[in-house]
Image (cartoon, rainbow, N blue to C red; front, side, top):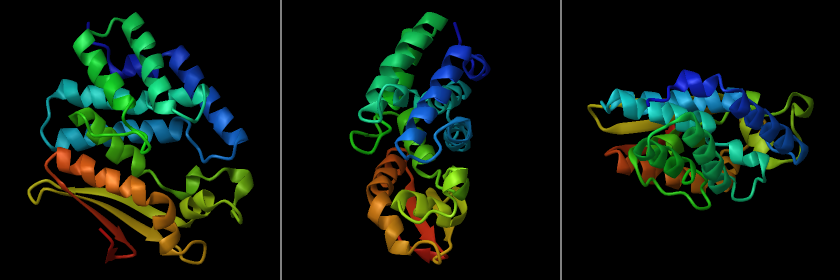
Length: 221
């Protein structure tokens, strides 16, 4: 039975976990991880594989993994990738997803957090690139703008524009950022995101691409 992205997106159980997870993260001071983030991640992950010519069903699995990847935050931020994978197994198995597709999705979800992640399949690689490239001002909570303390808030708030660009013939994928250095120095971005960018490099390599990071028109990676 082919489970579609629309079925997943409209599932009230999944919606509740996404909403409640974001509420928990707000209490402990994290940026937005709600529907704006997971929908953007789902669309970007699917777009990467679609442009690379992967089968439509693989693209759909990337979209599903992207939408569900952060539900483990409802349990705890620590090890949320692994708990999210277990939760996703239960939900998608109950919905009737075949074992081979289910294995691909939960493997991707369980391998998206930079502390334990690895691009172990094409869906995982696309999810890593989509998730780690979602840095933007609107992820900072409205009651914390402009942020003064937390470096994660200041870095996200400083980003005027972020685009993930693909050059398929040239086998390159570029995260292009415009940062307002009045809020955050470029080095602040590297202080908290260097591990994520190196993970993106590994994910891109899995897909046969070179990862580039360009900040304020200067090539960083």
